[in-house]
Length: 172
Image (cartoon, rainbow, N blue to C red; front, side, top):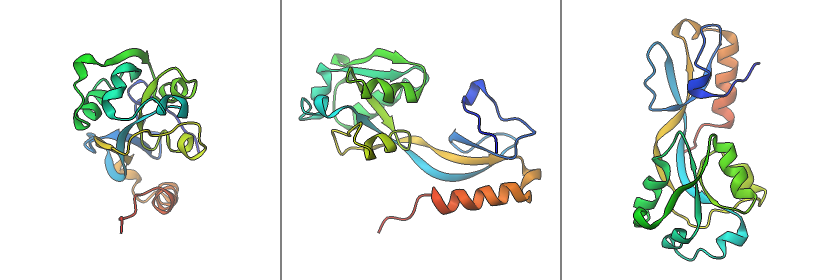
């Protein structure tokens, strides 16, 4: 199996069996099957989290903005009732989501986490989510492939493995 990252800078190729993309599920010429949602929430170290009693306390922190997702912080902050005019949203910029998590782990900012990118950091205690509010990004992760590959044994095996391990389970 060959894995590639990069989204728009590494577009889906015809010789690939399948891919996993974040979006609305509407890619021309690709079949798309939803895997799991993308939820946004702030993440930081425990030392920063101790200073954050309520969402408006974020106004005193540097908020790390992923360059290609400028809507993320405003979406979460609006849902939390925080006026963004007085926040330093985007005071710190990074190119990739893993860079945002890395910046938050190094104790110098609060990043907007995107599930599932930060789940391992939270599970290992490297990052915490200081607030319980999680906001849907309005997009999801999809398994995508060319229709002619639908009966490809490699696609079928990979899709079955993904469904077994990663698709969202109904909450009880």
